[in-house]
Length: 417
Length: 91
Image (cartoon, rainbow over all chains, first blue to last red; front, side, top):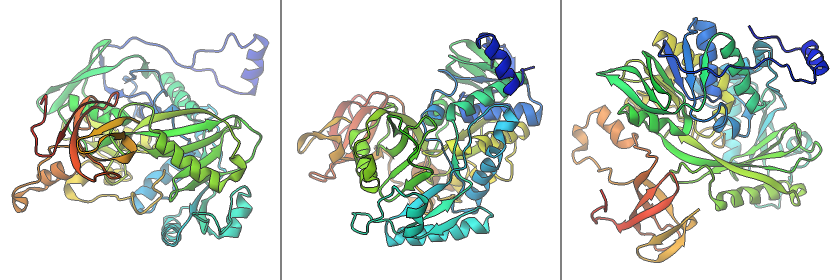
């Protein structure tokens, strides 16, 4: 049983110079067999393990991670959380996640620093205005908070935005979801890992999957660099590498993996009080609690597994940032990186069974998976435990690419997640 | 973030080109006879290889011609470039 984190534990440990904190999770060797194995120790994978143990009583399970937990896209994203999606299925999925976020720190006894500072989506042309207004109406019909702001209201909410009508892409208004915001990405992985470990889940790092053993149309286990692990249920949550794992099982997925870039500036005093996204010019920015500007750029337009990305993409984003926020013109950027995102043709995720019994995939989150972490884990755990999807992820099955029942969030919603 | 040697124009920066995705996916000869599964395979399913991949590129800001590229997606190194209709190398 884990010791509870509180103001008293903080004081107590301060007295011993913080040298006697309990380990947050163990470092076990893999057992020979588990009831289920989750492939991928990012936020989504760890959340899946947590809810499998907590809600479905499956504690004889493991999470295998080829690197260290939270070291992939969980630690590389721009931490934006929102649920203002256009279609009913997406609204249900993402708002389910947002509702869990609202109480997650208490549930995990781990401060994930969830901050509902609002997310504003700017409109820069008449089609943006029409699309975004339509989206606010759709959101409200689905019980999701959304308001339309005109240019003056945008300026009042975030005074540093350049709302001059004379810029190349003037701000014609925007939408605001006040319940949206940001969270501390590492804390989400660590909080779920600590919670899952507490219930007996083995989190095995530096354990790379080398193959999936099948017997006809059933799975029998996984080959790893730490030996063979027998299991009847495999849940793959491998983000950009989902296709690589799928190929091991002789399966093809409708995914393309591309580098998505982000960058942070030197830390400065509080300057931007919300998250601002501009899809038309592809720039979004927020400020971390450390004071760094967190800027998201676009994806490269070709498949690549190199975690870096192209210069022209970053250049385009920074041009837009500088026109919208002239105040940032002399900011120094500290770091730039890329993460490999798995993009579905309809820009919606896959949380689904496959035609191989015992093999489940949670992938295709593309450029915007972080916001869904708690909901994705909860629904994927339900799907694995019951061998049936929950009603909230039923639409996000793999078979939609055969039936044609796509959840097209590409053109219709906020493309830049 | 790499240089592509266009078979018509020579070496140019990758930002001049647009990628057309996986190469050698044949358009169905008898579309009316395809099942839904076969359509899904043709339209959506991709190998998405980490390693040597055959893909199509278009010199969008140059000669605007299409050609094929053999590229290692794990490090973006280009191994071969050949014109449309030519036999793919090392396959």
